[in-house]
Length: 119
Image (tube, rainbow, N blue to C red; front, side, top):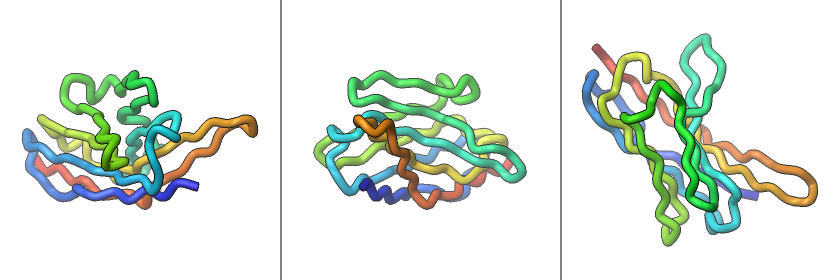
């Protein structure tokens, strides 16, 4: 079981920055991958950025060069630094943890944090 608690959402003007944090209830060394997803009104949830236990990262094309995912293993926390924000980045952002084992895999989700970008 992994409990995820997000923080750092809020309102910002276009061009601004925000940093999201996601604290996990157990060592992220025991988690195969962590990531951030977002869901805008009327749209499906989509991957924003992910990082594996081996530190490989993956970004959605829409955020490449603007967002950066990172981890603090000592704090069991994953961050999403968001720069040059655009109104189309407005969404609820969800933290995800994926644990893979002999049974297959399990996804855990945080409750989400709202990011609003105004023009």
